[in-house]
Image (cartoon, rainbow, N blue to C red; front, side):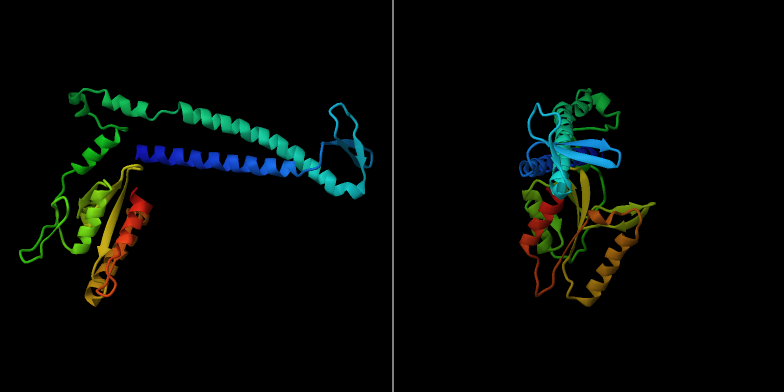
Length: 269
C-alpha cells in the first residue's frame, strides 16, 4: 500500500508539473500578443485614469481614454500573466527540487540492510519489488481443485486451468511477467466470497486485481449464475469494483486476444 501511495503521489506531482508547464506556455503566448508596455493606474476623485508605459524610464505613460478600454484590459491581463508566470516558475523549481531530492529507495534500504534473522521478525512497510512479489506469491492458499472427469488444460508454466481461454489469459500474464495466483479465494469475516479465476498484481503500483473470465455466456444457466457472482462483488462493501477485471465470450464470439492485451495494459502494466 505504501508503494502504491508513493507511485500515485509521484504521478500526481508529475501531472501537476506538466499542467504548470502548459499554463506557463499559454501565458507566454498570450503575452506575446498583448500590447506593448505596462499599465499605470492613477486614482482620481471620481475614479481612475489609465496610462500605457512603453519606455523603461517613462514614469507617467500615455493616457488611455474610455475608447481604449480594450487596451487597458489587455495590459492589466498582461501584468497579471507576467506575475503569474513568475510564481508558476518558482513553483516549478520547488517541484523539480523535490523530485530530485526524493529517494524512495532510501526507505526500502532500511529493510534491505537488516540481517535475515531480523527480516524474519519484522513486517516491512517498504520493500523492493522483488521482495514484495516473492512474499505475495508465497502466500499459502488452498485452490478449489478439479473433479476427476474435468478436462485437462495446462498453461505455459505448467499450471492446470479450466479452459483454453484461461490458458490464453494465464500465458499473457506470464509473458508480461505479471504475478498472478490462480483461483485465489476471497474471504470476508471468515466467509468465502468467491475464488476469482486470477488474482493479479500490478507490480508498479502494488495494487491487486481480480480477473473473472466468463467463458460460456451463451448458456442461460451459466450466465445467470455468473451475473449473481458479479452482483455479489458489487454488493460486498469490502470489495472495490475498480479492482475487478472481466472478460467474457460465447460460442459465436470467442475471447479476443487483443482484449486480453488491452486489459493488461489498462490495469496491470
